[in-house]
Length: 262
Length: 271
Image 1 (spheres, rainbow over the protein chains, first blue to last red):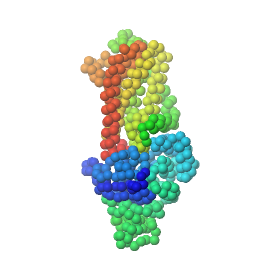
Image 2: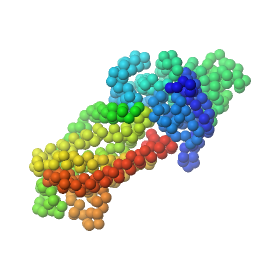
Image 3: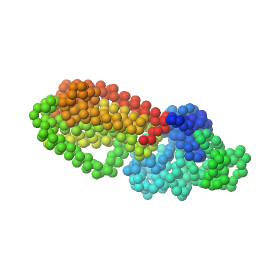
């Protein structure tokens, strides 16, 4: 990645799903994520978060606007994909009849990682992510938490400079979600130039890492920045904890309550 | 990932599918038994088909040998026709399609790769049919094996073009495999799989000329039962080359177009 460029730059991206009636999932949005930043994408269901992820991951074509991921325009889809690690659906995106190792072997080959390079990286990630005990078990027999770790390993295998994580802790219990975020934090310490865009409804799990937030609602980008700055701009008091700060900001911007209360 | 890595990716796709297939060991036994029973059924039916029959006199070995070639190669052609659409449907249902589409590899390459193992397995079954037929007296000893291979390969390319169009329809309409079934049923009726097209009414016989299966089976029977030379196989080879040149680029173009449509509609993983 060329670090003179922001990790992600979005200019006027918009998306309407064709149909009767058409559904405008994203109104034109603009934002930028710098290298080394972790940004948390918040928004209620149907806000347009997954649409945004799919566009940035080149799975979906926008109707208008342009985005650059790792300095590449989305039209260079294969170059973009080579630089991103993505988690969309940890539970259903593996070959369940194969074990974890065989799954990772297939996906790693897609990045040209084979042979000894694969073995080395597998050993590293198995140790870092605590997968030694289950890496040789069929994916179908793994728990959701174990599949979540496997999904993280797959996303990190090729050492991407940008991680797009769409509700990666969706099917995890709070402890497993905490473990997941801890492992992600370890990766970010190792790779300080890596950037992350992560969506979640679990404010508590991501709060310690959320340097910046994006808040979407009804396809519109309502807020973008550091939570403390956004609270100050809104004239709201700064809560004691970062989780409470995120919750207060989210409630103020979207008008919806969180599990942390008003 | 550059083009130089594509053969390795095809190998990994093939290897993945072999590993998955090996987890269903009973299926191998059942498929073997199915082949055995099917050959036996047509062997005994052939005992009822005696005397000169229209269309059969062109080939040695009578009805059993005729039907054997039809049965053996329809498995291969069936995979060429419906394997691509089947792979996409399975990946959509399992949820692995988007994960594969996220790799920096063209998705059509993975679709093609996912049909390698089924194709080679079907080729193995075709050889098993022929072996069983040889044991039961089919006159295969003087076969032009190389000629048969050329015809089978060209037919596979031509029919794969139709198969890729079926895969494109799966992506656009989500139920496009019905087209593959329709083509396969038409081939079974018109192309001389189980009986010579000559016994069909004249206008229907003409329809058989629209299907590559017709030329393929005629060429394969000529090569395997009559030991026909390449010169004698030329009409089949030319026809199949024409079908391949027309259908394969059309199939690839249809699949690429359908993938773009799925990216616009956001329904790549829907089924």
